[in-house]
Structure formats: structure tokens, C-alpha cells
Length: 297
Image 1: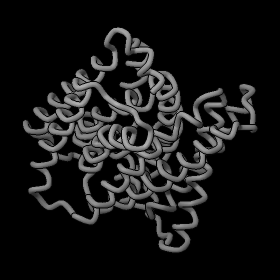
Image 2: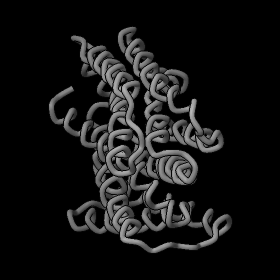
Image 3: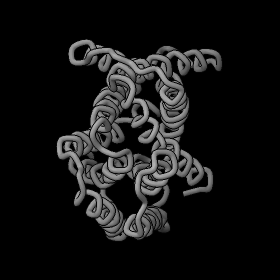
Image 4: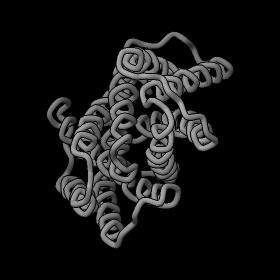
């Protein structure tokens, strides 16, 4: 994995993980599905406008269109929709930790559906990373954690795994930013309809709500998604997904700093185990003669 991919992975993980904290702020003052639908609408308009300004086309290939639709449904509507709803009852750090299990799900689904395989060192790395996540979660689920909220986060992580395997169809062949903008519209439409059916639109307007909404719309909503498309296109879905194992570290850290959520010694030990798992997966993918192949897996 080259230096640019490493920088992209780290940047994506930080931006993505910070979204759990900003989402927690948003759902405290606004209906989650309505707020998320509006976020996607604004992000989509900005993304498409920039894409057109730099010469990208409305016309997508069939694989790109399929990827946009699946990613918009699984990642935007299901994954983020369920997480926003769940964070009415669970801490931002808990949601981030559960989301970090997604790389293991990607590897399993990639093997079952696409015939993708990881070498033994890579499998060991994923197991090690998952063990670190379990260690962190073990200390937290012993407290007052809402089981329904946790269940929603788990289903959301599975949906994101499906989206990760589908995203290459929307990233290859150019038009990356246009694809990002269009999949935002898919999420906005689905969540907007769900909000009309299930929510009462009551908003407590505050400076924190406005700031969190603006940040979520522009940084995790648009910039992080664009970086993710570029990263997956550069190194492949399974390798890119390993960066989600940094979500517990960044997610817990940002939530501790901005929301005052607890950060314990067990959390820090778990983060170290997770980092070791990431290293093992990356080394297994960079073995001589295998790197170029795995980058296209």
C-alpha cells in the first residue's frame, strides 16, 4: 500500500469516525431520518454541481449506475439511517466500535459471493482486529447499553459491508464525484419518504445543531465519501475496508473530547490490538507477487 493510499485511509477513518459524534449531536435536537435526508440532499447538490463544473458527465456506465443505486441504498439509507436512529439511545463511541467490525463482514461476504480470499496472515489480522473490538465493547455492554440500538448498529454494519463490495462499480471509469453526488440523492429520497411516514418534525434549533449539521454534510457526508471511492478504486474493497478498524480509536477519541464520553485503559489496549490487526492484513496483501493482484480484488 503506497503512501498516498495510507494518507487517504487515515483521513477517511478520521472523517468517517467523527460523523458518529456529530450525528449524536444532531439527533438530540432533530428527527434523525429527516435531518439525514436533508443532509444528503444538500451534499448531493454540492457534489453534482462541482462534478459538472470540472467536466464530469451525467451519463454513467451500467456498472457505475448499479453501484450508485446499491451504495445509495445500503450505505446512505440503511447504514447511516439505522445509525442515526440508534444514536438516540446509544453512545457515539458504541456505534463507531460496532461499525469497525465491517471489514470482517466484507471479507466473509467477499469470499462467499465473489470468491475473494485472504492469506492466513490476513485472516489472522482480521481476527485480531475483531478481538480488539470485542475487548472494547465488552467493557461497554456491561453498562446500560440499549439492546435495540445495538441491534440497529449491527444490521447497519452488515449493510455497509454489502455497499463496500458494490462500490467499485460506481468508482471505476471516472465520474467519481458525480457518482458520489447521485448516490446522495438516492439516500435522500429513501430517507425522506421514511421520515414522512414515521417521524414528527420537531426541531430544537441551536448553535450546536447547526454546526454539527454543517460539518456532517460537508466533511463526512461529501469529502469522506469521495475519498472512500478513490481509496476503494486504488487498493480494492477488502484492503480499503481494513481502515474501518481505526474507527474505534477515532470514534472513541472524538466522542470523549467533544461529548465527554468515557475513555478507559481497556479502550486503549483494544485500540492497540486493532492496530496490530490492521498491520497484519496490510502485510499479507503486500507480499511479493500478490500486491498487484490484491489491489484489484
